[in-house]
Amino acid sequence: MTPRTSSQVADRSRVSIIAIDGPASSGKSTIGKELARILDFLYFDSGVMYRAVTCRALSLGLDVSDEKSITDLAERLRIEVRPATVPDGRDNDLLADGADITWKIRAPEVDAAVSTVAAFPGVRQALNRHLRSIGSRGRIVMVGRDIGTVVMPEADVKIYLMASPEERALRRFRERGGRGEPADYAEILASIRKRDALDSSRETAPLRLAPDAHFINSDGITIPEVVDQVLSLVRAEQRQA
Image (cartoon, rainbow, N blue to C red; front, side):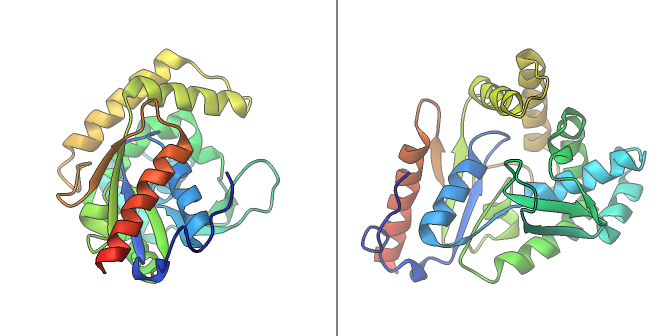
């Protein structure tokens, strides 16, 4: 993708916080990274925090359905995100209590358990404190499932990015194949549908469209086309500021 000039994204300082929410594999990370690059904003995926807690819980042999033990873990877990030190395609290093779990958080067993962990109010409270601290610095594109509704409801631009379960399963299938990992499309599709149901029905901060969010369906749309749609919304917000 070719770099954009300052004239194409004018006076970007008037928009400081961009929230992108949506279900698993809807393209939030890909779009968020490119948007942050163009605007020279920080990109942050809130989902890595929940995946880190889930991954660490599984490695410790904890019962992920035990709310107290998982909440206690979330409150004490030391999560670090730093520039990539390994040339294996990662965007950043992700460490939990000093252990590199960058790719471990994408394992199928983490996929299957992260919605359970993310549904615990205590876990969300513990991690939301960190997320709000990061977001409050401004000039950030933050992606997740409740950024525009709970974490950063004051965001200047809110996007809800959607794609069909079939399209999202295909994306994850290709992603795993590209890393040389075994992947079964039917299993991935079933996992995505299950996670959608869990994320949308949980009592605490369910996945939902914020009243002032812009809905974008990415089925059949290229990454540059989605990015252009979001940039148009950012420019519109800048003109109104």
